[in-house]
Length: 103
Ligand code: TYC
Image: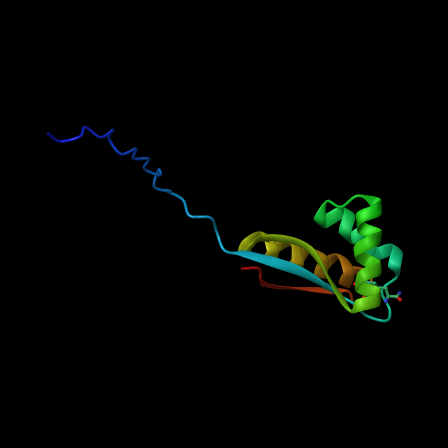
């Protein structure tokens, strides 16, 4: 006679209806002219960093040439970059950031 076996457990993953968007790193670039205090202000104002994290990122950019401000979907990354460009240009600072694919 056949041995009775328990039924296999089947767990089906819910199909995702909204795929996660591609993500982009916003990279802050060093230059010789923008004041350190202004860079810290930008990191707080546009990237939601606290004083200590903003200082850490600014010093990393100052010493290593670049640093990550945040990781965002394309449209949000693009608008943060545009906001920083406008804010810096209005005050005659050459500060720039760029984006690169995170994944
Ligand atoms: N290198 C600048 C200075 O010595 C400071 C600075 C830091 C500029 C980070 C840009 O993204 C930057 N005043």
